[in-house]
Image (cartoon, rainbow, N blue to C red):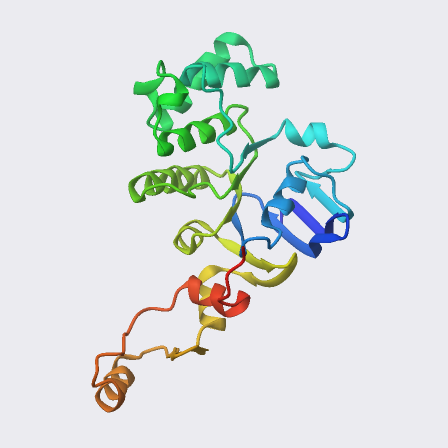
Length: 280
């Protein structure tokens, strides 16, 4: 496998707090790889190490074949990062936000403007290039942050919960752009709480909790492998062809309409492995 990320026994501590604990995974070139987990599971701590924002406390981490602890500057020049925070300059226009950011990569002025307009078109923001960033909707701001992350033509795009807080229309717009980028061969690493997002975008994923790896695989394989158990007052029955069985159960036990037949989802896997209690 031609890996763009290789993490082995990765560890991150903050004093006595262990945020990432002996985590190993790899991301292949051209795939979309997801990190899922409840609040406080270590997702953001992990990707902050990947984009050289926070140094590992232990283990080894190579990104694009480079040692993150010794070659962080080289790594940063070849990746794009879309953080959770919408840290754009509210006093600049949409176009200016991109043009100014391009200076960090020593992109010539004319080329920066050309790339910026090209990306605004790709993100369906070209009609707002002269608007102040502060006047954009939440969905537009997220697309602007993504456009900014693509300015240096990265080999790896890293997204930390890219659609949190967006309305359904904005969320699907972002998903469509990410699918197009993946189809064009861009490697993507993302964290998410959205199971539909993970199922739709990710070729492979890991689920982590309390900094440790719980499971790894393709979304459909994880659903097939792990779903089927009691959830409190509910009983989930996992079968390959459940129509006949459902009718029998409904007739015998569900005269009050308490039975529902549906496809198993990645959310079922997530809840089974991480539990149902709140993490606040």
